[in-house]
Length: 344
Image 1: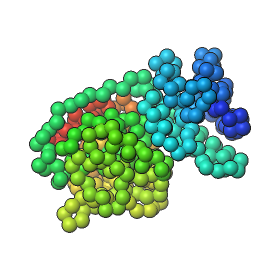
Image 2: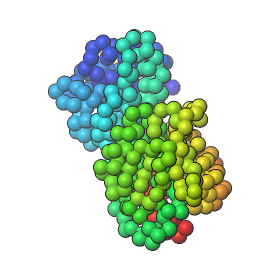
Image 3: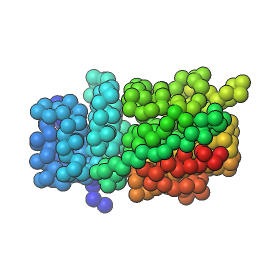
Image 4: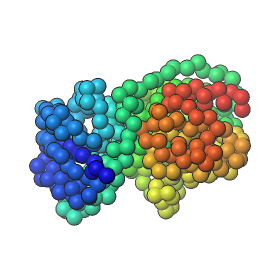
């Protein structure tokens, strides 16, 4: 099996060399070129045809986001952004990057090497399997609102789970939600700190109110709660007849905290047939079993189809388990959600 050819774009010579040395230690990876700025990167892409590119956002001569916007239409390839804590990563994802890693705030070489050999390597390997057709074009459909939902929305819940490629997939769905949509709870695998910025970004760009979830937040129509990244799982609970969320620390489930399975399991138990579960693009199988539990409890379920997934992992496992009632292209997920909810 041929190694994954990687182009490293990083202006810091020290960090660039550290990346090259540590990535090349993995036999599945081959760094074929490095670049200090987007102009060198463009030439390297033409010359070496890499499978994956790692990209710093802050670069000389042209920033990484502008580079992505100009690069993708001409040379589409999977890109993993390496960024400090900044909402610019969402601009990068919107511009076509597949995923990102948070650059650790450490100074020791040992900690940086550990970060590269664990987190970054995993992201590169996942990115190498990404569906580039979805990076090249994003179909976004506006839809008619089902006003009948407003009256009964307080008794319904929409639960969404996603991972790799999910930030843009979730935006594609949520931007089509109106203020009549029942309360929405979401787990998107993301490092701590970024979920709050992501929630604020969605809040600014969508008609619904979006926030990072806190224990006690009510799940109500026109509101979306994003599970906080870090060491807490988010669960649906019912207090005095009102849906709320509970965010509590716990061990990783399926390698993740928060876990989609944990959320979906709680929705199955608390809301049962009054819920709609949606599983979107992502690596692995987190959420598949929980979606099956939701369907067994009488909930309706939607899974993103293979052709529109960046990584057809989580939705595939869910589909193979029989957890997916409706399989839809990404641009049709919100439309299907409204159609299902209007009949509930």
